[in-house]
Image (cartoon, rainbow, N blue to C red; front, side, top):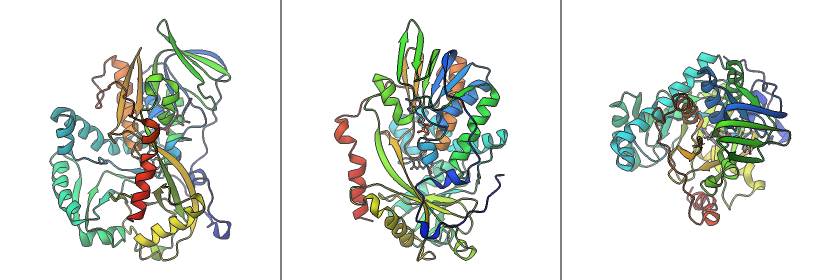
Length: 433
Ligand SMILES: Cc1cc2nc3c(=O)[nH]c(=O)nc-3n(C[C@H](O)[C@H](O)[C@H](O)COP(=O)(O)OP(=O)(O)OC[C@H]3O[C@@H](n4cnc5c(N)ncnc54)[C@H](O)[C@@H]3O)c2cc1C
């Protein structure tokens, strides 16, 4: 397990704009930038959880793989994230997904998504990754009676497929979360939380150890495919590869013309309190675990090892940067009676790139190239599992191991306007909160 250094509350200094993970994660592995020309079988672009899981599993399968990262591992959505491991659909259930994409594909996706949390925790154990992980459950609490009623049926759907998911009644949920806001909720026993920066740095170390090449501070500035060879240029070097995996999340759009205008940005403010006292912790999430609710102005909460309570709010047009600190406090006070005057020590921003389906997606770009585009603010365990399956598919030369059927990317219509939609919707959500 990760050792916890003693963390001093920041007090009057005001919140740090670096994430709490930068303070609590073990140091990053020392990585070189790409210099000169190299050749590999498979080039992976992007060292977030998707790219590094793909590279780790490829290297373990004995394939020749190189990862090239613009910045440092985890500098994208992975390191900005809240670190919740949430093996649930954002908008669906095992039955409703079957109606949307067909029964067989739906069952495959549910097995994949439901099992992704366990896979993630198993991978952490297998590689001895120190990332403050805790498999103490993920809650999806219901803020209305109607949702609570629906969730009763969802629990039965998950359970009949072998997953540890139960519906908990109002009093149990209020007691378990320490919030009066909810009237029931689903508990996913295989869910939990981790330090996402520590996790992705651990994946980088494991990938290196397994034989992958991992280069940092090397943004791909051009990418071309000529005579069966992909050539990726960075400011200091060049990679030639037979096969390609784009795992650059929002950065995929700039790398391949077919990826342009395929995702929308959801800007999020994450924050962490000063470590809470034992008395406060006895009331807020007293049994551990973490949760994300289904309100339009979504609310989530979890602890880390030193006892920071970590939460978030989506950015809107109505709360500007000067009001972020106040908004963070307002959200905590509104949800937890035991926290009437929270101190915020860390407040950082991130961008979760969302697909209009809100489902993880894999694109077949032709020319032996695939793109993973599965952020959706919910990708830590799913993208880990996609990396495993992508490696298996590349090793087998067949898409059969992929639970997500690769398709051609589709640009979002009137993309420039649609890109403003998440922030506009969050403005309405803020007003209703
Ligand atoms: C604020 C926030 C909170 C979130 N909270 C959670 C949560 O609690 N639980 C959860 O499961 N998910 C959460 N998510 C979503 C989760 O973080 C993502 O689904 C996941 O990390 C995406 O991983 P990825 O590897 O696909 O992308 P990323 O982590 O974004 O990695 C992509 C990498 O590609 C690199 N790159 C981009 N362009 C180039 C280029 N031209 N050349 C080389 N490299 C390039 C970037 O620098 C980056 O490191 C959250 C996301 C955000 C933003």
